Length: 199
Image (cartoon, rainbow, N blue to C red; front, top):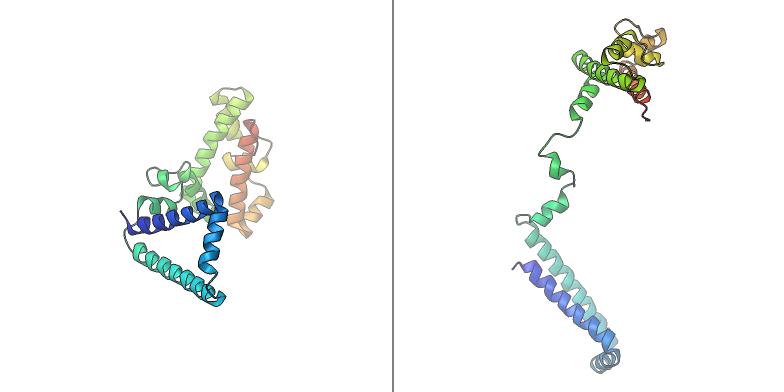
């Protein structure tokens, strides 16, 4: 049995006993306290109480140092770990790869932007096919032509023939990261709208 369990268990039993005597036999407990403490000077009681509190603090600090240096228990590990760590170390988080690709694409990685564009094109094609009730081939043609959405930014993002507006190109030149992020966000919003979802 661990030292901490013994110490805190003993203190808990003593505190429970005192509390029970005060609840179930308050008169007898009060008379006992008056009999014991009646003949003691108040300064002695204060001194004894201060010493008791000090000793408890020293004991708690000593136990904390003594027990804190040992190997952690399963409870200690569970308290120190985030709840999601239970599964995060065993498997990849959902959509972590596309999130990383988007971050890289926004930063200016052309290969990552190609990956993001391909994923968004596939999502837009499926969403448009379901939302408009057309075949996958017709949806793919609509996405390539830029007619799948009313959002010109999203349409140009996924269409090889539709250019971005002059303002969008100027934004890309002045603040490339913000403009790339804006284009991706607008495309994701357009896909959600076409599929009937809300963002």
